[in-house]
Length: 366
Ligand code: SF4
Image (cartoon, rainbow, N blue to C red; front, side, top):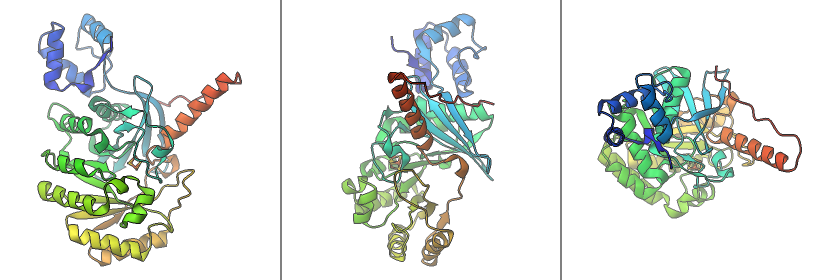
């Protein structure tokens, strides 16, 4: 019998579940409170032993196992590798800002979008995550680090709008009073540009920030690094963005990973500025690209990054250069998962070949 994942259930569904087990309604509230705190069934000491045993038999919490933790010595950024019940690996990154803690979470195990500069591209797509598995990352990070997370970005592994229903269910759960109660305005949903879903999201009445991975303002060039652009070219993408800003009155953030010699010229800055000026309610976030092995992409030097930002600023475009966090732990999405997946594959191959087993380091939970 397949076990039910309790974090997937909203309040009403959890009440139905406890009723199906002949338990009183108040048990649903007790379970939900402990789930939100990241408790395992053994730790749910507000429930009787019998109820805990029954839960362990037919359900799992949905809180993922911590498979690895990397902690930056430079700025306290903490990168987590989480393992779901079926062994799939996803990453989350906890960052500390002046305004509090922010977590970047994954929506899928792997990604089908194939952006050339991304570490998620080199490893096969496993599956999409359920709403509970997305929520479980936030809860597990809060519990592990004993912090309260105030901001969430769904910008880790995966394309959130390719897992639309689960992501929207997650958004409703995480913003609910009885959930983690994170303000919708403090949540960013990232997309590489799945145009029809931008329209659908605009109509959800969820005032989250939409964050669009743009990376190039020219169709022919963007299509070379982001295959999604062949399906939904820039004019269609910007029309959907215009609709989003009109419906939600929210400013859209455009992520622009600066790659030396690829998209960092004056020609690129001018075209980008022209598109931004037409849209109005927008902001450009420049990200000096992280070096990902095998891509051959390099970040521009500091002077060129500032020159590019200056060109946008001079044309009245709101622009910032993303502060780099966790540089010493390769905090870009997908890198830790890729490394661990490769290590596990090597360990499997070594086992099959009958040679000494590669040891995968266990997490430092302290
Ligand atoms: S950048 Fe985002 S959408 Fe593109 S491959 Fe990476 S995870 Fe997927």
